[in-house]
Image (cartoon, rainbow over all chains, first blue to last red; front, side):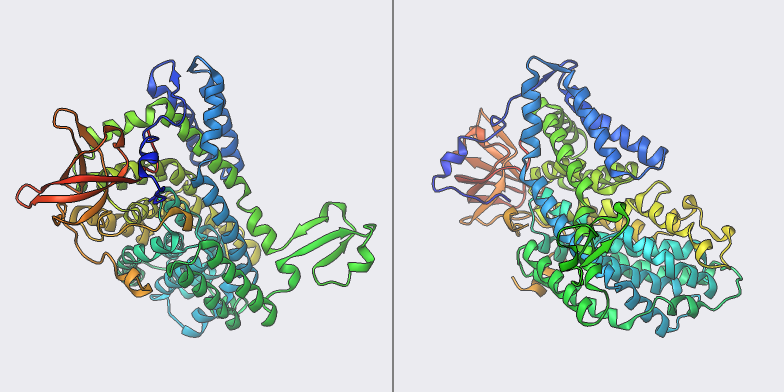
Length: 519
Length: 92
């Protein structure tokens, strides 16, 4: 909630409603103000689903063109339209998400530079699991990694590179193992405080990230408690491949028990966020710990975390060349700054621009009346009571995320709709954020055009180059994995049941999410 | 609220018609206004809270309301407007 009560409450009272910005009129009526967003969604479906190009900057281009096309539909002054773009881009929701993403990116890249996945590989190795239990343990360990690093895509890539070939050699079913990896990725993408989708779900629903994480644990753990035995049962029923090789050899090459120290880095961020520390402070502590562990335990070099690659003719090249974070390079194209801190922040640049533009397009839709029209229709026909309202929120979030490969973009676009439907029934920010993010995380890793599936598959096609015994016929067709992403399907089902039964439902009068300033 | 309490909050099946306690003040989003009756309407789930003394411009805002009566049979209550305490995340 925005609980910024002024000294004179009536001062705020006078400014309510929609009078703060200009109303925009469009040829074709108020529905035409949705043109930029509709164009963008269409672009996103063509680019990411039909052409399978997961390029966030490509979506930026689509959103920019949509905003330009929308301008030609405006009646009267185009400057009001242009000003509305600026009004949208300066919304706190976008800036808050961008700041949180930067910090989360630095933390998660530093954890990956420290080889956190190697610690989990070591656990799998010493556990000595057989073919039947392998997909289940893969699901659990992928969930731990994804909860630590916040990126399900990164988890998919890392686990397909090590756990997937090990599972094949053990005799576990390849499609089921891939499904288990994607399920673990969903778990972490949904729950981690440093996950981009967690951050977006919280800020679009005016809720603090730590509170959101704590409140969604119940849904995630219920779904995982069903998915885990399901993997054991399915693994017992589904045949594996008969491939000669030593699965331990695959795991041992990446195992490093010392890297498990990053469970502490990850735990500090989660606990600090949940106890109510500002997310920037919580993640900063995680970064400090992760950097310290990396350097003290030799998990990474200083240059892995931050490095200046300077040309030999730089004025201070000789003087500073001895520093561990300075490298002198002869190749001009290698000149630059690098390391996990750099890459972590830079990894969100394109998404940051995209969120600004999507929020701008949403503001056009709000000022032009299309958002109101969609809301009115939804309230009249779908969200007729609180149960139907929650089912509508689940359904629309699922639909949009099923259609758009990059789930963070889909989540940003649908966030305002979820907020308004939920506010109408005084459903609190935590519940709204949980409904939004569960569908976002789940549907982003199920279908053959989903970003998480494509990320994992792209890593899989490189396996024949790494392992001589790995044949092209062992690749899992992305179109065949969808029935085996158990955690994703069960998470969606949990929310359908939760909407129908009231499990986990909280009203604003029960508990209010903490103010947005604390995200 | 402790960390454990935050993790344990909401492990229950919440009714669609939560009860209101007369004499207490609640902060709720107002979603409608009846000019004939001069009262606003807030839906807390499927419970209706009629808000007296509210300015119609406060629709979609979060307002503090002092509950004066509540009928569990019809899941309908009445209350007096006290102040605007917040606004919607997305004004339309």
